[in-house]
Every structure is written in structure tokens, then in C-alpha cells.
Image (cartoon, rainbow, N blue to C red; front, side, top):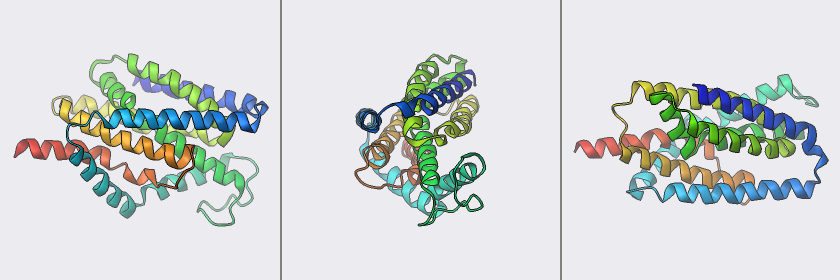
Length: 244
């Protein structure tokens, strides 16, 4: 869990710096930085997908995971969490008693939830998150998560200057997701194979591309959060096929 705590600290520091000093950056500079992060995120996502040894497994996990995510309304749940936190902690909310997304919600609420959701997904879906958390949980070596922490700190600075305080609260998601993976890795160290890791990483790569297209480059809205079950389904499918 050491690596996870380091990651949380860098996100908070980077996000705080973005809140205080990001406003001094012209809007065109901030939008260009976010677009650059979007392009980089898409490139990393494609690189991750190419690790797949069987793209059909990734396709199946994404499709089934998306159906389950829509059924369980995962992204709506993340939005409600963001709305609740914004109503309690963010200034300038016009109707803090409501946590649902409505057509008349304030601009600050939209920015908070967008920053919270985008940062949470970006910080918690990726090869360093998966591999680093497992490495930290299995061996106590948090070197990969330390590298990821530096990258997330710079990303938090850029995102906070654009999306606001919601980015800081994504550290809670980092604690739950990244810390949870580390804890589960300790329990499942004898069951995770290289093939399972490759397909899980490839599924995460497709989600990163979705984040880039939807939230960062603003090309097309995609409910990326609803694909999160694919991270569990991909290695599960590999295990099922291997047992046949």
C-alpha cells in the first residue's frame, strides 16, 4: 500500500498547485495541455491494447462488461458520488441539496463531476496501475507506482486548472481501486497468469482510448465508466478457456 499512499499525495499536491496557479494560464494554453494529455492517453491505450494475445477475448469482455455496467449504472454511480462531494465541498453550487445530474445544474457541478470522473478513470486504469499495484501487493516493491505517481501529479495539475477541485477527490478513487488491487494481489498471487494480465491490460487500454475520445479530446460522449467490469471479465475468460 506504500505506493498507493505516495500516489495519493502526488495527486493532491499536483491538483492543489493546479487550483492555485492553473488559473493564471490562458484558457487556450490549458485546453492545449488537456488535448496533449488526450493524445498521449490515446497512444498509451493503443499500446496497451496491442499487448493482447487474443483480441476476441478483449472484445467479449468489453461488450459483456459494458452491458453489465449499463445494467448496474456504474457511471451514474460515479457521477452521484461526484455530485455529493461537490454539493458538500465545492463553492458556488446553486443547488447543493441535489446530487442528481439535471439539465439545469450549475456549471461548477458539471466541472466537478467531469474532473472527478475523468481523473478517477485516468489514474486508475492503466498498465502501471495494474502491474504496479500487484507488484506492491505481492513483493512490497512500489517502484512502478512511484513512477506512476509522478505522472499522475503532473496530470492532476493540468486537470485541476481546467476541471477544478473535483480532481483532488479522485484521490479517494485511487485509494479504493489501487489499494484494493494491491490487497487482492496478496490473496490471488498464485492465480494470476501472464495471459490473464495481458488481456486485462488490453481491455484497460480500450477504456483509456475511450477516455481520450470522450473527456479529453471531446470528440464523442462515451460512458467509459460502464466498461469497468471488463477488467474482471477479461482475465476470467482467459481462465475459463485455459481450463477447457
